[in-house]
Length: 416
Image (spheres, rainbow, N blue to C red):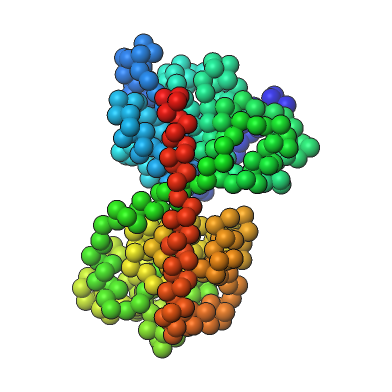
């Protein structure tokens, strides 16, 4: 099976090169790895080479995993100021947005994990502790790290019965999980599943995303341009939207009696997507990057054509719509929940515990068409007590679920 796994890596690499002909992300994936080991060797200081430095290595698949683990990085940076922190990413969206992270000494793409690349990588960095985030398992790294007796942990891990490790064909992959020293799990269901297969090295700590978003709400600075745009109007913030989500919003935008303003933050920020959104309400739309005082007073819709601001924009919202529910799955709803915004999203949410929880508690609602969304938004705008109740449900939920970071750090301090 190991042979086929390594073969898959080479086939995947070949596929990326083919995709790079038309995909800018694939091109970034390739160009970002050119000369990677040379840059790593140049960045590594003399005490790394002499194995005198103490290195904590955190690996994330993408930007979402970085945000999920950021509270851990902040804690390690604060508690161990002399610790060298290495941060790696598999995807361009993670690396390109976090390559200047203040919480890491070194930020790189993860090399293609062939056995030779893995050995060269570990010879350069020689980590004392490795943390993978959520579901990022690279078995060639796990094999080599295990052979070197380097402790490995997984942060905010979550498992479901249908995952490939728990299928008959996934037996080899499941066996590799025994190499992990500790899984910090999000829920009891994951613990029960791991126990069923004899994997006992785990702790149920919760999800570090709750700590991250709560910190954001407590430390967020004002955004004058957003405040000026909102004015005295109630604001709907539509985060990480796709065209199918924006189709639902048309019913709201087309009804001036609601007296709502809108901020739409597309999941993919490019000119093509911006132009699509501008067609929804011609003449009433403004881009954040071009906002002026005159535009702020005359426009009804702002397109957030920048990255990294959305989580702070929710502080000005009255209601939130979260995109992705008509595709692979909804995006982050906790960034809105921590600010006490009642939340709407599309039907593909069932893999997300926080979405199911907030639906059950009546802080969030699934909508499948524009007419339904319009009816529920109208109800919230007319009934202030209803809005306040749902807002409190969302905010209290985040507070209740916080605390995973300290539970994990208590364990990590024994290894750092």
